[in-house]
Amino acid sequence: MSPRPRQRSVSLPNGIKPDALPPYVYWDATGRGRWLWKKYDTTTQKQNAHRLAGASATLREIWDAYEAITRAPPADTVQMLIASFESSPAWEDLADSTRRDYRICAESIVKAETKAGVLVGTTRLSDWTPGAVRSYVEKRAERSRSRANHELRYLRRLFAWAFERDLMASNPARGVKSLKESARQRYVNDGEYAAFLAHAGPRHPYLIPVAELAYLCRLRISEVCDLRREDIREDGLFAARRKGSKDALTGSGSPLTARSLCTVTSKACT
Image (cartoon, rainbow, N blue to C red):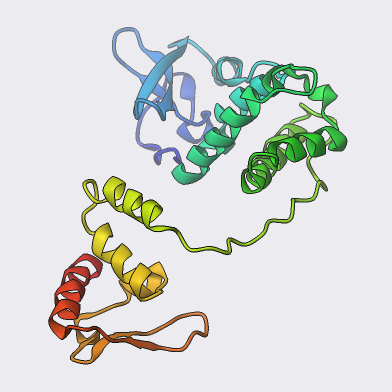
């Protein structure tokens, strides 16, 4: 979220120029006047105003008050470092989906236990070495290799942020190799497929015909959404494949059944 363009025509006290102010700092002329810092709360999706100084404050005093209120507390544990990272401008610059994913990683990391039975969130930053990161990743991989690699990438990002701000002497996760993951070699069974439809169908009805076509015709989701009404033929459903795969024509025992199913999907994808 970037600051709004400032109004250059506004007259500010003490000859202060709008472009010289800290980010999200505004002059409030109500009453005797005051300087406010507005912070966006991602949880409530609202802006909260914090008083920085009165009308007589100089530009230097405004900056001093701004730096004091936005300065992150000293972080000496993993949990404190995560809190500092999530209150920083760098966090606000991340996409919503990235922030959600990082929070999932952070929750898993702080709740994990070391071999000594200590919560990882309470461990000191000075205790983290490449070997400690490797040890965490290998222990996490006992439950899920993919999640272990996911959290390793998060630790690289977190420690890189700390290293750039002199909160850590180095980035201990840098250079730690990801684990080798094996590709999934099985189809979902009927129970898993039925569970997906039962969970997703009531919330998002369009997913049912999309899933049916993807499953029965072995199509990628992008290939399903590429389908148009003209792809519905008397002899079956034509699908233009991607990534070098050959185009496919999937027949049906009943042209009417194929036409009905594809019509529903066509409405969902166009």
